Length: 126
Image 1 (tube, rainbow, N blue to C red):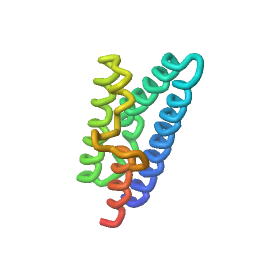
Image 2 (cartoon, rainbow, N blue to C red):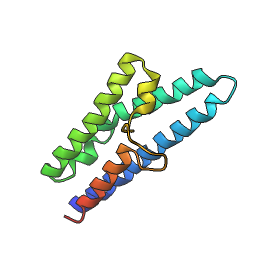
Image 3 (cartoon, helix red, strand yellow):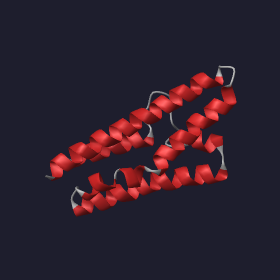
Image 4 (cartoon, one colour):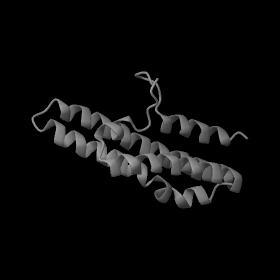
């Protein structure tokens, strides 16, 4: 059961990570278009909103994971959510765009959510 629960959670998180990547790409494309900044901001707000809702939207999947792992997973999702909430409350588009990316992030490297998904995936082998 725990393995299946982790599979379901990983699948869910991968879908969310894909949606975030799509929003980031969409936002970048908007910057080069006629309505650039406004649509870019909308895409970044959507990204932050998705991250803010992760603990709630993944809640039942996390509940199905073993108690110890579930607590760690829930805490990490809440960290993503808290950062996104802060970015949204500040109204900082820069902060929203930087969500999931450490200062030393290099193009082509996985973002923090993708790294976390890898960590959750590795829990299956424990």
